[in-house]
Length: 133
Image: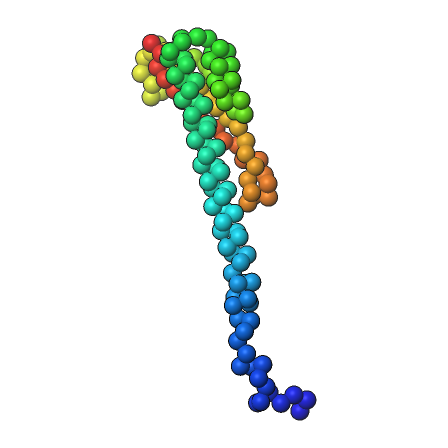
């Protein structure tokens, strides 16, 4: 026999066990923390979209301006977000779930780069609807 393993002291040596266990667990920890950071970033971006849409809705309610003025004012307050505003008049039952009236609809949209999806651009959009009359 080439090696006699009965008296080998390397079989009882446990000095590198922690390093090997860490090497096995570290990639999972990095993936988990990256996922949590990406989720947090998506939640913050969604909150920004909601804030922009709500700001536009409040401007529509306060100013009663045209849709281009509301979109421009909202875009000035949130420069990284695309904002579109439009008015909708509901004379009767043809507006689905909305009761009769005039409504301002503000849509905010943007994209963010996902860290886990290979750097893909993920669209984020929010919409606010407010009755203005």
